Length: 165
Image (cartoon, rainbow, N blue to C red; front, side, top):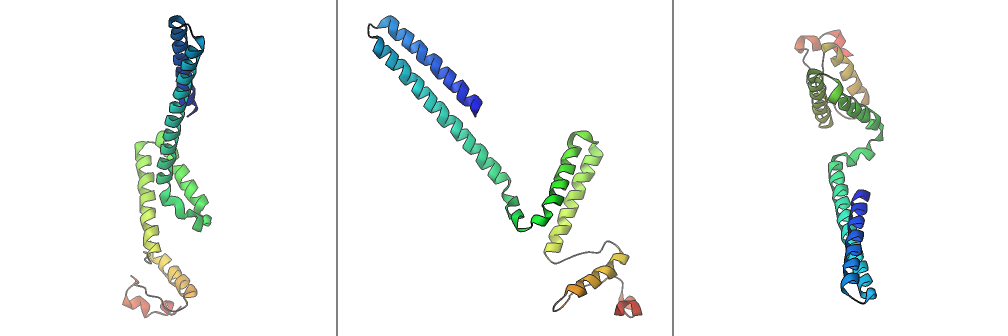
């Protein structure tokens, strides 16, 4: 914005000086020539300022639109640091890592985001059989009314004493 203002002001000043000089050479009234030059400078500065201000507003709008999806972050401040770390890690792969690692990092973030969306919608898939029992215990410990779950261990396992836990 400053560059635009300085450039526009410089051009306006130069044009005003040229108009003043032309007026002085062609007219006997130096006051009129000076007034024409000053008006030219003023018009140039105002037009330049309006243009620069308009561009700045466009930039602000573009940035605002770009972060609209993050506007809910204030509701969950405890996840800000992990999100920042993820963004920094993925951004660091742009020029420092091979295309393979860059693609794997991006794919891992996409898969993780899908898992988070599934959990937010009430579904969670265990990654291993060992994890399943811990998750069921955790779900039952925090449950106030009912738990609806589908387990992959099969009917026989649910008849064993381990399932009673």
